[in-house]
Image (cartoon, rainbow, N blue to C red):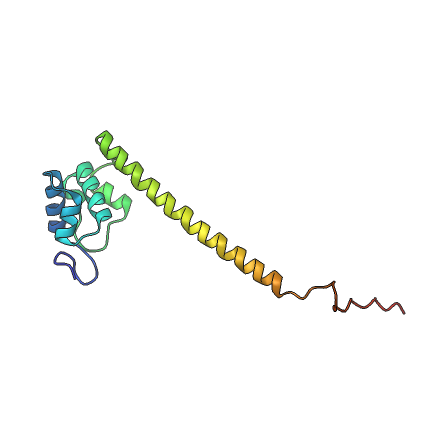
Length: 143
């Protein structure tokens, strides 16, 4: 069990803020996530939310507000989607997206291979209708 997460995986707002502030101060994401025993993707999400909406954008554990209620309570529409701040951030986002797509392609290839093998087995299991030693079908009886 991590020292920052509760038994059901919720992370307090204070821990989120600490993690984001450490990354923004120059620590690597890897070092912060290892130290606080947090998933990397969560830290990236918290950082982006913090940069877009400040500390208020990082809610503590509990049921999240519905999108409309969240923005109505703050007096307006949601901000436009956050764009990566630097070319390095944009490159990292593209690398993450590429890795995600490669995982999906790999999963699809596994599924394709599975279904090809299943089809081959089904075809092999069918009794042949022609060939040596195979009885042909009987003709229809025309009465």
